[in-house]
Length: 117
Image 1 (tube, rainbow, N blue to C red):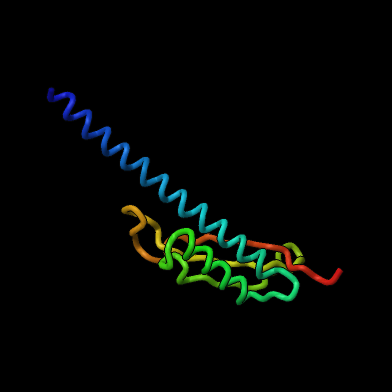
Image 2 (image 1 turned 90 degrees about the vertical axis):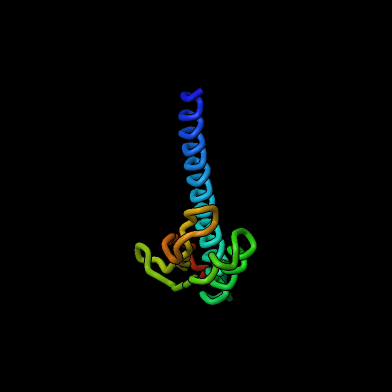
C-alpha cells in the first residue's frame, strides 16, 4: 500500500510536468504561426508593417488570449540583401496553465516583401 502511494505521487507529478510542457510548446507554436501569418500579411503589396502587427494581434487574441497579443512589433529588415517583413512577439511564458510571467517568450516571423512584377 505504501509503495502505491509513493509511486502514484511521483507519477502524478510526472504527468503534470509533461502536460505543462505540452502547453508551453502549444503556446510557442501558435505564437510562431501567428507571427509568420502577420509577417506575410504585412509583406503583401499595398500593406504595411502596422497592418501586419494588427493581423498578428487579432490572431493571437483569437487563438490564445488578448494577454498574449500585447507586445507585437514589426519592421522591414535586411536578410541576405533582400528586404523582409519581420514581426516580433513577446508573450508570457505559461508556467501554470496559461498563467505566467510576462514578456518572456520571444518569437519572430518573416516574409519576403512583395514588389512590382
